[in-house]
Image 1 (cartoon, rainbow, N blue to C red):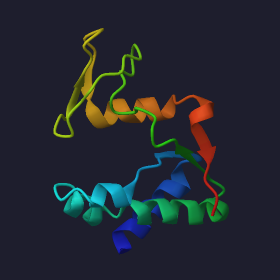
Image 2: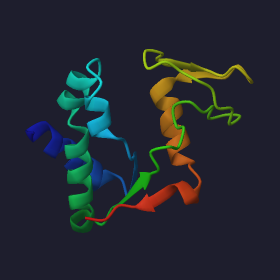
Image 3: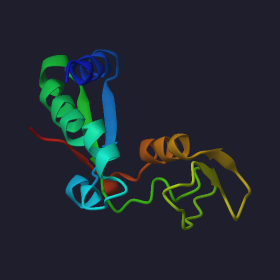
Length: 122
């Protein structure tokens, strides 16, 4: 828990706007293949701490709609395609753009349309 506190404090001190996905943690934990990875990473606790700290550090935490296809959409051309959870590299079938899956998703979260984003409230 101490590591999470340091992580969220450091992020809150350095970054004004923090945008995260609204993921269904309880639904993901129901999948026996994901259960330990999700539980070990404490996704909900990271979100809770970031939201809690936004008033203290003057940050803004934004939540992107859970149905926004951040990891399945090409950050270059916008093509949406199916991907397996085990795929760690995004390779667009339309424009051939290739990028690490998480980096591609981060770009898409940054550029998510405002109608898919809401301000987190504590």
